[in-house]
Length: 385
Image (cartoon, rainbow, N blue to C red):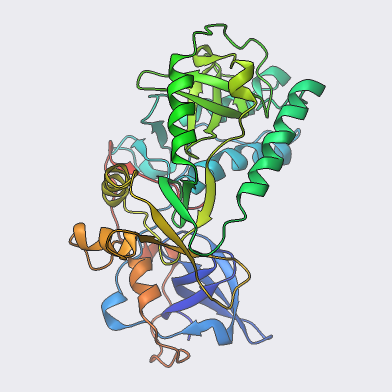
């Protein structure tokens, strides 16, 4: 019934999600609102299930408006797409942000600013850069030169080859990137050699022409690593989106942190392998921090790759410790003393297969689901743009 809080299988998220039924359509489908993410999707009736009573809790998604985000008439759709692509990166990487707004304002949450904690810059500056009329102020993509393009293609080709992992292959965990994505490496000895050689590389030539796809060296406060340039944005200070090709981690760094990489190191393909893990859907910032610490503690423990037989076309794996045969994320949940770290995990473990049979409920507005309160200075992640 319209207004019911239910469990649905989302074709977008490839997972079971809590939702509120907004509308019943004539084609035996429903429009539903994902109360933990903030977006709307049309779901067929055979993908709607009852939600257990203990999971009928307030939604976690909070609707906010971005300060200074006013689309101009000329090219507004193109500019909107560029900004959307930027926020998609934050969504996919579970980037922890700090929210700033005037709590005394009547429309306080419609005019917020987001501060990126890793580098301390405001996301709103990126939004403003995209809204400026001059071409140099927009998100800048450059076509790689022939040489750099070949290097980038070589890395991409080698990455595809390396991703063909077999059942029971040994890997080592390196990073957790999004709610179900991790990065692993296969050759620990080569990884250690690359890290050591990159750190000891004496090249200190700043990379002048920053081109999407280039393989470079990044020197930050805490470490030196090989990276691939994703894109750059022009603000008062040029910020560049890069991905560490040996761990899979995404970073935003200042352009003056990017250096030329020696030819010997640039020839070695990136070592990180992207895997989708079965049943790992963590979005709670506190638990994400705990997971990062846990990953660091087991990074040198060999893990078995165990492919999961499922009905979807998206292949998922379990990572099993070789020393005690335990699934590492089952172990993590035990260590964190949390039976299930996030409501989405509880939904995944709740195997009720019946369609909705709840009694009709009062038809609520979307805003009435948003019971979680934000304060100025709170930490959050973006779930939908």
